Length: 178
Image (cartoon, rainbow, N blue to C red; front, side, top):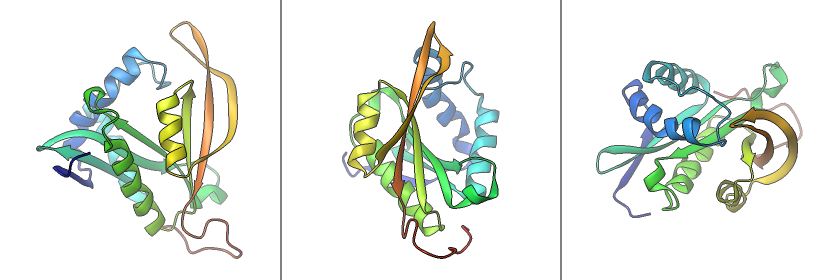
């Protein structure tokens, strides 16, 4: 990845660009379990929710948003609050150029600073590029959910990968994430 990029917090004004990046993943692949691409308005709501307690970052290159990464809630029970689910998406013509790694590194640092202790990624498999990216960033495989989704005429399996943030599961109750 060249250095002519900027990683910054997303704004609601980035929603249409993020929706456009995500749309082919939904429409053309089984990498997303969504069946209808979200509108810019729906994406704006997702950005707002992520920014409340987690993070949503975008990567700009030459003033254009070409990728994004975000953290969000993992589960609904209170004891999960120190863990989060993470995802990264790059424009299809910008994949495998280092942008996803740069976004994830910045995102994981931000989540750690906010007090999160574990990051989990859910990957529709097979997807060697995504699994490889996560492994290179220290994520470890922690399980498979076999045949849990159905899209494009096939049953789909997801791999769960996990990475410790900060002090991880150190003894004692950690401060609340902020």
